[in-house]
Image (cartoon, rainbow, N blue to C red; front, top):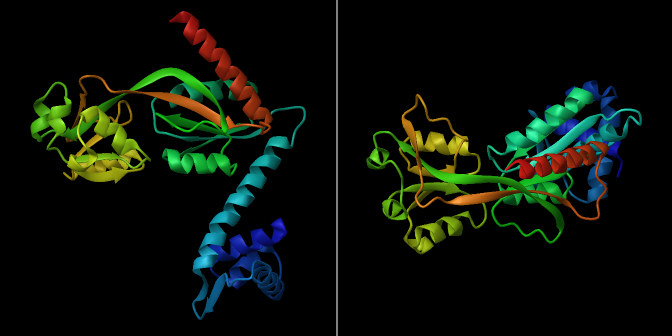
Length: 296
């Protein structure tokens, strides 16, 4: 299977029109049609349904479309990171948890860009499950994780910073009058929590209640959407502090007592060569951690 044909497929699926795709690819429509038909024969499945209104992906086609985009993105990033031997260029692909501690990582990237202005940063926000899949498939080079993650397949650095959990609730809710939230305060509260694997068990452990006795009103992947859910009155959000600015909104942020903390880690695959950007980033991060630890 040629990368060129994968590009033909992705462009056609995006344009939903053979005519528009052929024009964009600067090839004839019959040539494109032949290439796509041969691709379907190669994968032994129907990827497109041809209708009077254009091209529609089949269920298998949707799956193949997602994977083809990942393959082309990985190849593009790899080539970009290898194009120059005299200068460091390309994309540093990070991904993972929403945490204010990412600021330290972004500061390091910014310092690299001062010396190598053609370096770009790509950060994919996702929960741990999606992040580890992105790391395993090579879509990101480093993963930022929080809490307990199986690290047997990965190299890991514990970042020397700690996140603390808070509750975000509407300012007209009964809990809004409290200066801190204890576990018993949440026994009857509808909660909106992270959809990350085992996040619910983590919360249940802090609350000291069986999971089935906790009123979980919703789950979130990105905490901004959780704050919108809270503004709508669906429930109160348990999240790490610093991600949502509640000032000037109908929400308030309240710390937990006793404090519930969670550590951050940077992971990358074992026995896998890092890109030149990745090596430089890791070196500068390790130097930063050493200096930070020495100054504490």
